[in-house]
Image (cartoon, rainbow, N blue to C red; front, side):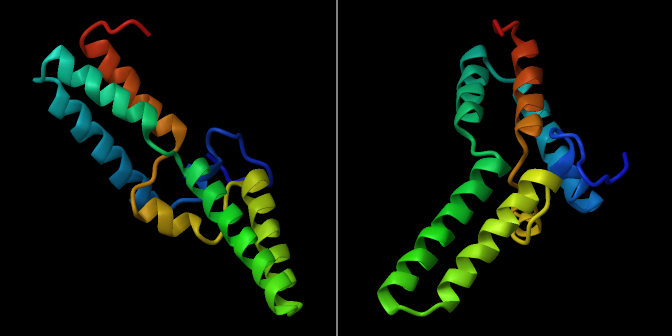
Amino acid sequence: MQKGALPPTNQRVSLHTKQEINKKIQEATQRNIEYYKSKSNEEIIARIESLDKEWDIERVLETNAASMILLSSFLSLATRKKHWVIFTGVISGFLLQHALQGWCPPLPLFRRMGVRTSLEINEEKTNLKALNNYSI
């Protein structure tokens, strides 16, 4: 896979994540799948339900950016300092860069923390559903 100017949506985050981090996330996903192979259907279903609630990297980044934009906008109004408006613009620019290319400054930190893409979460869900013929 090559890093293009506008990579495919489902690959853009993993393309901009260090391979060692992608590997750790993949290994953790595989450990989860292996762990649940010996569990009951109820435990597997509970895990699938928890995966439905897991925040993916997009949601984490959007929440982070929106919070920072709201905070800097508030500080701009409260302090009447123009540098907070510039901060708002920079954050918006990084959010746009992420939307287009799949990278922004907090991405490496969140990925290192183990925040997965929706594709990575769905990989685990699909494998767990296959374990007990869960209706997809």
